[in-house]
Image (cartoon, rainbow, N blue to C red; front, side, top):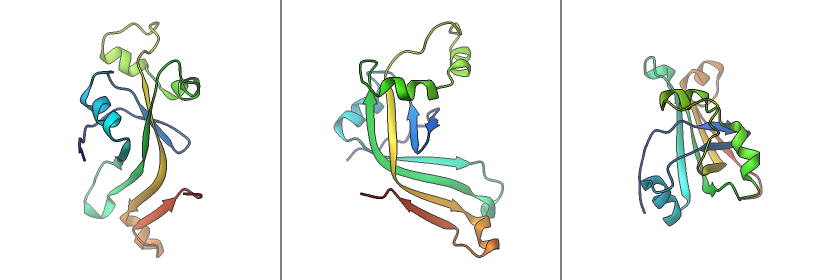
Length: 129
């Protein structure tokens, strides 16, 4: 089992989280070896009681431009800020594969839920799994 935790700029489309990475990167090699992933998304902390975030569990799919699902997920990418940070022209189309993680299970944590009588951790599982 390989564990690699690297912050990435992600985008979402429904219950899918998407990101891109260089074809030969360690992320791509690890995904090829084992597509099971866990994605952590958090809101910035302002004290312990206000921590908020979600942990998504699923399988990563790497989509190339030839994949029939590629056209569905690529528009979710808002590449303008990424292009500016990398000194690329905004006219340059995005390139490279798209990694898609469809959530199979989500653990949502928000400690303020206690104020309303709910558990601070909420669990969701995709039906049919």
